[in-house]
Image (cartoon, rainbow, N blue to C red; front, side):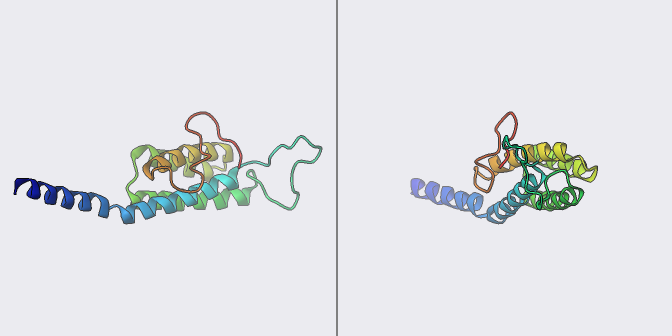
Length: 143
């Protein structure tokens, strides 16, 4: 009887822990998507070792409209991360990225967003876009 009561109690506790964060995990997944999209936008043109390395029709990370668009995505990711209840490290990095974006410092915004993406990926068990390429330490490689 005691074993049965213990298993029922553990089962209820597991359901309470596992059932509650489904909505929070969805918010974190949405935040990961928004932050990853912002990082891709803020990334500069790749150097291919040729005379012309960029597509002249595409806007890259240092363009003002691209920075403003990426900052809006970072702000969206920040609000979704807040409602998802992520850790203080991710929130701090996201706030920094938004402030850098508002100041139009695209490289600093990208680096802070990458730090935030790493913390968001850890909170979401490395599930989501960009989680496989975000650096665990060091610098980011362009997508």
